[in-house]
Image (cartoon, rainbow, N blue to C red; front, side):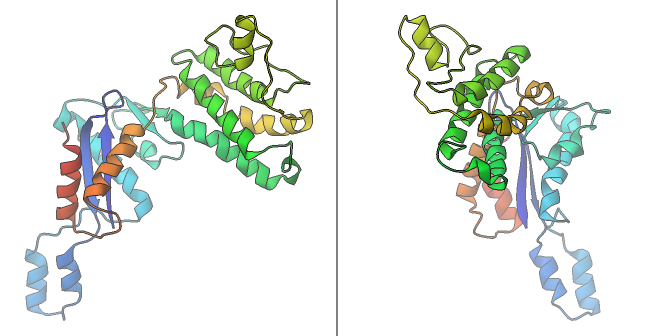
Length: 279
C-alpha cells in the first residue's frame, strides 16, 4: 500500500513539504517466505526495511499530515497556521494541536462545500419520493442552485454577513418563477449575479427563465440547504480558495507513477519528487 501526503501553499500552489509512504518492503516479503533459520534471522536483522508506514489506508492521510506538521519548525522554520481540507478530512484532527491546543485553524475548500450542496439535496431527494417528478426537485435545479451557491461564496470573500445573506438568497433566486418572483433580496445593479436584477438595472423587463419550485418543495428542502448556510461553516469559506492545486499535484504524480501499477517506495519517491520538487 502506497500513498503521498503533501503540504501546499494555497496562494502559490508550491509544494512546501511531502511525505511519501509505503507499507511494503520487498525484503521483508522475501524473509517471510524463507524457512526459519540462523541465516534468515541474520538476514532479517541486517536488512534496511523499505516500509515506513504501518496501518490501514484510512490512517495514511492522518499519519502523513502529522509527520509534516511535526517537522515544520525544524525542517522549514515555520508553523502551519491554517489547514485547508474537505469536510471529512481526518488529517486536520491529527494536526490541530501540533503547536498548542487548537493552534491550527480548519478552512474549507469552497469547491468541496459547493459540491456538498448537490450531494445533500440528492440524498434528500432519494429519501423523499415526494420530491421526485416533473416540476419538483430536478437534477438541473440542484445543479443550478449549487452553482449559485458557489457564485455567492466567491463574490463575498472576507465578508461574512454578505456571504451568508447571498447563499440564502440563492435558494429563493433559483426557486423563483413567473407566477412567484423572489428576487427582492438578490444583489442589485448591472454586475449582479441575478439576471432579474440585472434586467431591472438596465431598464428592461425581467424575463423569468425557469419554472421554479412550489412552496411545498421549497419548504421541504429549506432545512437541509440552510445547514450549509451557517456562520460556523461559512467562516471557514471566507478565503474563497479551493484545493485545485492539490488535485493538480495528484495528477502530476500519478502520471509519473500510475496508481494501477504497484511500485516499491524507492520508485514512488523518485516519481513523486520529480513531479512536485518541494521548495
